[in-house]
Image (cartoon, rainbow, N blue to C red; front, side):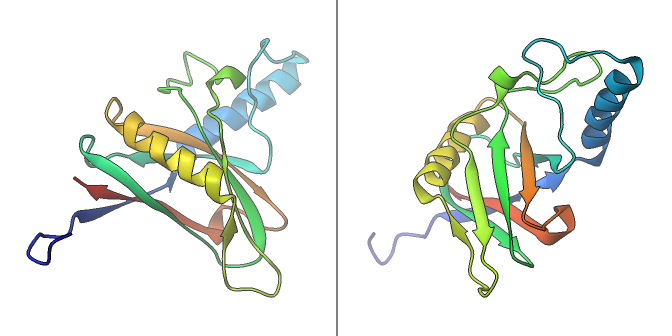
Length: 163
């Protein structure tokens, strides 16, 4: 890059806990249990250690994925899985076929402040987000918490360069 060329603007887009959608999905699980029913064939039910997050794309075009910015304030592990669902949970249930591969996995070891991650998968997933942003204003994620962490321990965002 030439010295006189401006650096691309970076956009930090946070993953925000969607409390209403998480609650709606938990109510679905409770309702099935109460009525003694099983899930719909292929339906993804929210597990106790999972929550629904979202990114509201403040810009949709000309984005290039730069990096994930994920911090756990204590040791543990999170798995971030994107969904292809444009959600209306009162009308449609989340189906397993709508979960995107690969997932991005981030963890922090017991005696470390540094975050580790599955770099190749996280990079591939991030690059897909640049493409998905072109056709969506919002994207939903399932985040699974394990090894002692929960939503209060997570701060996560995706950083894009504006081309």
